[in-house]
Each structure stands twice: as C-alpha cells, then as structure tokens.
Length: 489
Image (cartoon, rainbow, N blue to C red; front, side, top):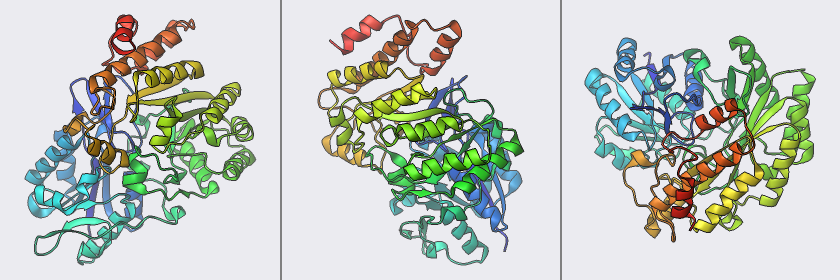
C-alpha cells in the first residue's frame, strides 16, 4: 500500500517573539524583527530519503514560513497523510503537545502521529503511557529510522521490528525497540530536500556573508564530549562521520547555482576536524575556482596558521568559535578541555587574515563565581571579536550536566518553557543563585556594548550591535554601574 507522510516543524510563537526549533542545538525564542532562522537539516534529510524510496511526502516548516497554527493544520488536512512526523524540543514542548492534540482532534485515529527531536524524556516507554495522542517516538538520529518505519508500514508489517522507536504493541503496551541505527555511510544520504522549504527565509550569517546565504552540513556527529551539548549526547552520538569533500563541494556549487545563493555557512558541530581534510577541502575548492564566500562553526584550538591561511585564500569570511569560559578549570569540568592559550593565538591569527570572528560564552558552569564571570567578560573584551553571544548554561535532559545538576540540587526550575538560557536561568551554582546569573548576563551584555561603543563605531554599526543583544536586556548603557554593584561587588 502507499504511505503518505507529512514531516514538519510546527509554528511556535509568543507575543513579541518567534521560536527557533528544528535545526537548532539550542531551541529558544528570538525577538520579532530578528532574522536568525536555522535550516531544519534532519527533517530535510529525512524527506530526501523518503523521496528516494518513492513515497509521497510533504515537508512544512511552519516557523520559517511564519504561518499560524490554523493554517498549519489546514495543510495537514489537505494533504491527508497516513503518518505525521513532528519535530519537537524541550523548550517548545508545551506548544508541541497542544498542536499534537489539535492534530488528533482534526484527524481522529486515521493517522499515526510521531514525535522526534532533542527531548530525551520522550525516549522512554512511559512517555506514551502519559501522552495517548502520540503513537510513535523516533529516538535520536531519526532519518534512517523514519525511512525504515515507512517501508515497514507500506508493506503492512509490524514497526516493532524497526530499531530506534518507542511504540505500542498490538496489545497496547508501550515498549522500546532499542537504539536507532546510526547512518555509518553518510555519503549514502541524498542532499536535503530543499524544494519544499522557503529557502530565502533561513538565516545564519556570521560575518555578514553576502546574501542570500546557504546552510550546509559537511559532516554528522562530533568526537568531543562536552557535557552540556545536546546533539552528540541525545541525537547523533560521538561518532564523527565526515562527508566526501567532492560531494560537499558539488552540493555547494549546484545548490548555490540553482537557488541563487551568494555564500555558504557550514553549520557542522565542529567543521575543522583533521588538518589533512581541511587542506584537502581548500585545495579542491581552489582547483574548481569555486568563488563562493563561506563561513564555518569551528573549534579554536584545532586551528593553525597553515589551515587558516588556506581557508582565507579560498574565500573563508567568518568563523564561529565556542570559548564558553576564561577559566580552564571550569572548561575541564564540562569536558570542553579547550586549550585557551592556543585558542587565543588562533583567534588573533584568524583576525589578522581578515576573517571575522564570532565567539560564544556560557555563564553558570559548575564552580562559576562572580570572579570567574568577570574573568570571562574581560576575556571577551580582550579578544574583541566582531560579534559574540552570552548565554546561561541550560542543562537539557539526556546530557551529563543535567544529571549532575539534578543530583546536586542545582536544577531549580521544572518549567521546560524556561529552558532556553537566553531569557532566564534554571540553575544555580555553589556560590551564585539563579538571580545572580541573570544579573551576570545583563552585566556581560552591557559591558560588551560599552566596550564596542568606545571603539568609535559608526551609528550603523551601533544599531547592528544593539539588534544583536537580546531584547529583554534593558538599555545597554543606563544601569551599568548598578549592574556592577549588584553583581561584581
């Protein structure tokens, strides 16, 4: 029999904000007027696999399209699928469950409703007992699991034989079919099914790359073991699986030509793994005379001058580096193990080559104090990146840091909607309360704004900087002395 499958990221809004879910390692709300919109890689790869199998599908990104829940439900009703796959997240979970209930009211029992995404607490059979509106949960990396499930459904067989599912058996008992199959041969995946999606609405543009800009993955997985990072621990494991360089550059070239993209951002967990691979990538890009500017997510202590020079010569315009803290003791605690001395040196080399730098910093790592936060803010100003991000550590279920903080009694919030690290703190440390951490975040942003302002930015640059700061931060200059008194003293 034929199986029609509807894959989706549902609308997620609140007054003045839109949600960021599919494609993000950090689901959260962005203020209206901002442009950040990650590409939903796993949904798009899953859709491409299903198309390759000859199945009838529809992929809808309700957030990127900016549609209402009513319009979203109308799309489902018009398509009349047999299986609906809804990518969910921890911080959007209340909204996700509400939409699932509306789908069930609309479609009745004629459709199978499946959840997927980085919410580890639904990867247990008990979840289905508590949520009867959901039929299936796809565990972790779900592209191949969905393809296998669709094939089994099309053949009229029992999906209990498919690994990577939480489901009910024919007697109604919820059970797990075990861990999912990781896609070992990553080059067997077709390119993401972009033709369903509003491609010009996706925006992740470090260094002000020429627009429109395309987002690509050149690998799956990450070999590092940061205890706070959700994707390797919950979604795709620590098995690093790089794609064939030629296939990556084929995708870069052909998709840019087809859609008119003028630049590419590689949003891999860690793009710059393996010096030989990095140099080979640059050599092949140069050989093709592929004059497309690009940017990457990278680890600062894996770089060196030779790699960075080769990248700059082939059009690299910007790099996102995760620094997180100025205290190596804290970095070791969360298994980041970043060599700060080497990272600082490589950041200076990056800047000297004309490559723009975006840095991320995270407050609230266990052991954090007022002094270590001031040290981190001072490091941010010393490194003087073109842009940066301050956030508060947000321990998501399924991560080692979540279990650690839960055991210590440092996890103080049970409302999943507050787990975004951008607007509020859900944790404390031995020395700092959640209110201390929220004040520290305001202090960090204000300090950064003043640091950049005294460097005599143009009004245009100041306006761009203000737009990069979360809207909940009050006026960046007014109240800085008060923030220092509340937090530093």
